[in-house]
Length: 102
Image (tube, rainbow, N blue to C red; front, side, top):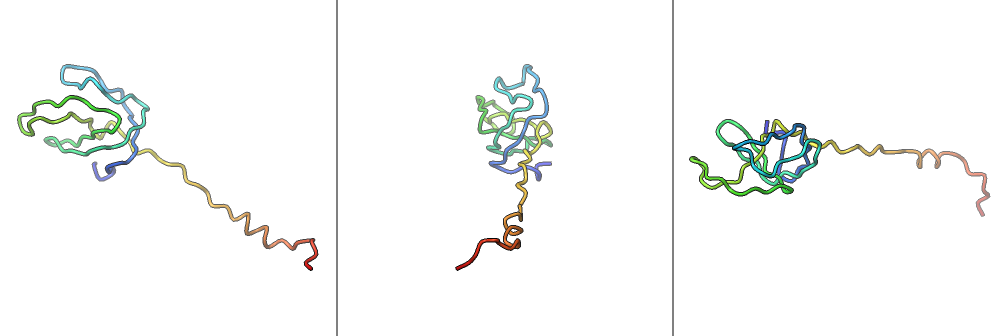
């Protein structure tokens, strides 16, 4: 799953991140666009840390003090619109000009 994501990539949150005892206080907002700061594996899950969101570090029994992240399944990559290449300027070159050339 993490192969679809990379550092500095823009992603959009596709879920409402629930509050709870183990939920970090600063969470993504559904529909919000964020930039990946870090990608980490924690047990069998892949988590993203985001440039726009920072939380206090937690004491994890395996990793020690670490900032919580957000599971990759809650995001999708931002799809940038493709710019269509126009050849109209070249078509105009093919039309004979009515101006006289000196």
